[in-house]
Length: 186
Image (tube, rainbow, N blue to C red; front, side, top):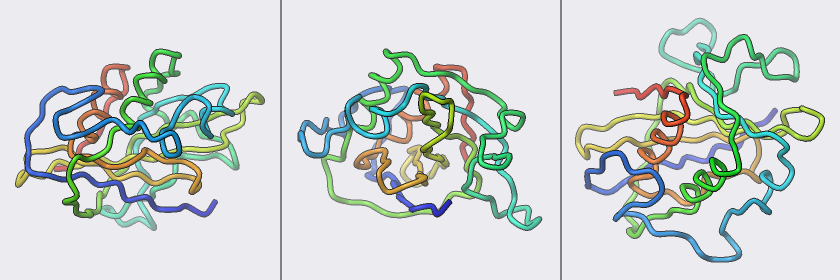
């Protein structure tokens, strides 16, 4: 499957700790054209949404280059490779949408590469087939004391919304509060 890269890396020199849905560096997107809701694809089609942790596969045996694809067996997700998973409840989805709909108050940004993506959000239809996913890689940068993220989606129709400096920590908290550990490259 061809992946469209959405480098959603976060920014701004500020420090945050343990925030989950909002922050002083981010603002809520209330624009009806760009706001993601339960009626927005892929949420509107998803019968089940899982957040997962897995060991990233190396590319061609190189120990420092990792695949940004999810573990698969044929066209299905290889559940034997998942280290942790959590099926999102309606309340979880509401919390996740609050995070997605956060965007930066500022325009300063940078892009960065992350070496080991080990978390994903998986969308399954009513037949149990995986139809969309978002792979997330986390990194911590000492110079700005923030956890950042990069996301790769299965299609251009799927997004984590606009970036903001605290969204990486919000996503980490979201995964970890639901028992799904995150790998944060330092």
